[in-house]
Amino acid sequence: MRDLPNFDVLIVGGGIHGVGVAQASAAAGFQVALLEQSSLAAGTSSKSSKLIHGGLRYLESFELMIRLAPSLVTRKDFFIPIYADSSRRPWKVHAGLSLYSLLAGFRSHVRYSTVAPDLWKSLDGLSTDGLEVVFRYPDAQTDDLLLTESVMRSAQSLGATLFCPADFCRAVRDKDGWQVEYQFENTTAFCHAGVIVNAAGPWANQVLQHLAPQQPAFAVEMVQGTHLELPGKVKHGCYYLEVPSDQRAVFVMPWRDHTLLGTTEHVYHGDPAKVRPLDQEQDYLLDLYQKSFPVRDITVLKAWSGLRVLPTGGNAFSRSRETQLPADNERQPRVVSIFGGKLTGYRATAQKVLNKLLRTLPRQQPIARTDELKLS
Image (cartoon, rainbow, N blue to C red; front, side, top):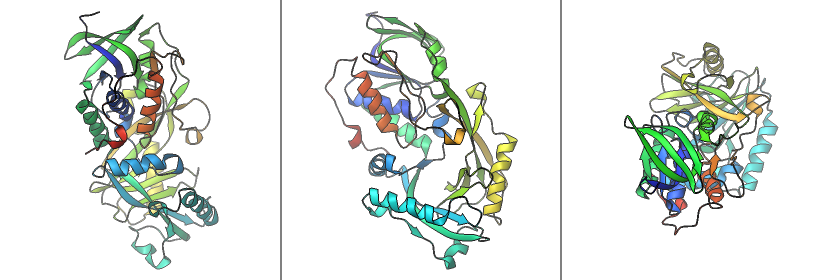
């Protein structure tokens, strides 16, 4: 064992949560390695709705990301059109936005307003038939892939090691942690790790099966979400639309030189690597888009699907989005898994994971603070 590379923290999975843990652990002074099977953010983290939500639960993270990553996070106006057949009545949306502003201290970047009716026709071709009111509130958008890559570069600048592409094969428990086997550059390689962080997203339960002793699977389901890229670019901001049939929220937003439309939610069974957009998902999104923006082009330029990992049971849209962090031993964990979570909260999730790891690993001298590290 003395001849093997030794890491305090080994992370499996190079999505936003994996790289966030790499950054936080390296900043805390630990020797860190990350194994990614294909490329950074190849799974869910590059197939999100590209939004940095500034809701109350995420307000601190939202403000921090605006400060730390000004070239990656862009403020946008968000519009909520309320029609005669919308389930959410204007008074209810008004009350919700007012409460948000109040609890957020009426800060300038959380204040909302309404759009004057004489300006409705300028909103990127938004339908005005039956339109009662349009609310406007501030939020932000990012490039999720570039954000993930930037966080990993930050971790590497602090000493973290990235193995990519690298396949995690198995890990065997010993008295000091784990003996780990993985494939890298067409060669079987080995290392030792004090703790393992399982950040493999849709593959996380598969990773648990390759530990000895094997860890029990966590009760989750994979929920497929599809996005469509359409011609033209909505120029005034992002739109929060309601699907009349099920009251789900769908976003229409600018994305590079095009328009991004999404997302859907369907329970997915199968190989995470084989998830693909379904015809019914495309129809579902385009029906709403054509109803809401009748003069815009509905030619599909690209379509892609990602997988969210959500607690088992219930309607996909109404399930909890709380991040779950099960460990093999809560008092002194040697493996911590990450299930679920949002792009906005990656730093908070990383800190929670690190707090768990500190129950096992001896504290080191920190070399940086992640809330001070600029991302570009």
